Image 1 (spheres, helix red, strand yellow):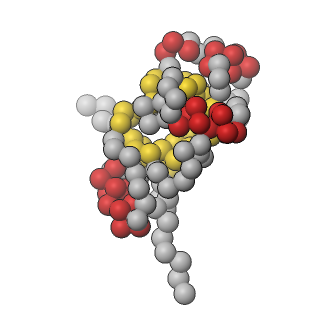
Image 2: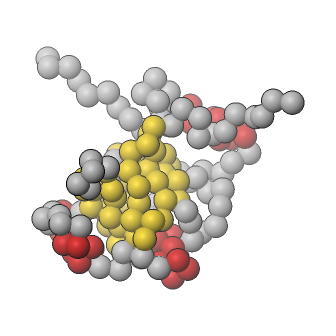
Image 3: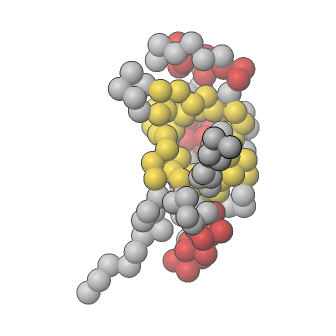
Length: 145
């Protein structure tokens, strides 16, 4: 018997989501000098998100709740720490192809919203408190022309 393909097949890791109650403190604790006021809004999480690199080169999305949304639920249930992932669709697909794949698999996803990595959807197959999987449309950068 063959296993059905997962909706995560082919998705590219972009960043781990790290939940915090204090964005500025968390950035300072990580040795980051990023301005927390420059954080991007993510309406899918109900959070502001600062994307930084760890010393080992990993991309981390440090997120602080701005609403009583999913990130607040993560913090209430699990405390500060890992809360999910941002992943990208293959460049040749796009979010529409991912939406069709999710629908065929019976997996609910949110509407499209603009977050720190661009247009994205939230996979709704799991508890409100996470872990959260946010799928981002990856767009090719134009060539040097």
